[in-house]
Length: 372
Image (tube, rainbow, N blue to C red; front, side, top):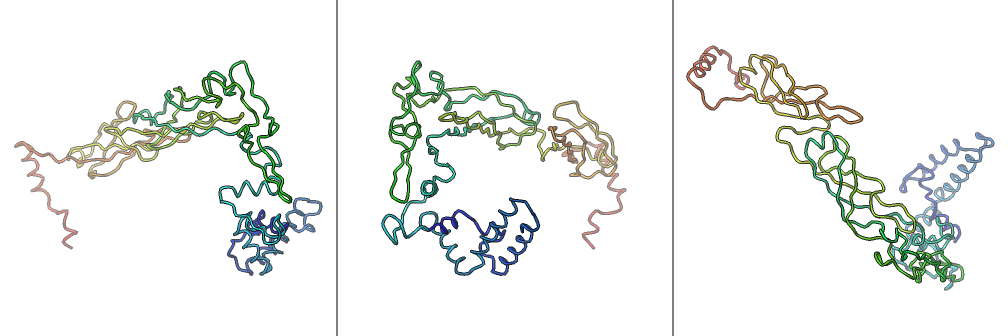
């Protein structure tokens, strides 16, 4: 039984750095490599290497033997309860059938309470408060530049009357007489010792004889509150910002949870974004595109900048204006300008004559390549 317990607690596949479906050849190869690296003869006086070598040897002793490996896999598949059969309080073949929700706790209770080290149960110890979620609607410009704002929430908060103790002002919680303040009751059943939360105090370790009239002994109350939040520059639509310690209060002296703010960014009538770059579509005339020239391009938070177009600029071409995108602590994006050549819907006589003259002077069809 002791060997099976160690098998459940130890992941020998992980120790050797192989998958659980590794072939015997791969297991042997991995063992030899690790054994050479951590052998005590190559690290004289190094206790850590010696312990590592023992761990590797123990893993190979099981996985290197087909029968032991098969039994090891079965024990791990059954879990902490199903793998321990025989020799129990009910005699050989005794088996515990427990739902999956309690397997982790029962394993700790069966063997010295595992990670808890024999101390009070998690219910009696400090518990972290729950995370609180909120939404924030932002203008496009505010999301780009960042801002400090106030969030108005209605959520659980520390009781303003008892300051989280749960007891009526002027009184103090008393140590539970049933569990002695541990929050758990031990039930010794022969070979095994089981622990369960104390029913008298609900696992808190203390009893409130005179509850706070505001929170009725819970230590928390649901009330409106204001939270100052700093939204960083460049936050994207749908992005979530985590504010540490701004969530629900903890229990039994535990830390508060976090406030998770989901940002919803309104679209802009001119600009869009591509990562840290801003994008904008700028209409130009046929003459400007054909002959080239300087055009004014709008920016999000400043005066327009000049963009020089080369002769023959094509509609849909993209042009970069350095440093006019989204600025963060890490980088600054650019402004990406897409040229949109405008074709007039109506021409006056002078314009029509000019276009007809251009058509007459054009000798090469743009569709020549299609004909070939």
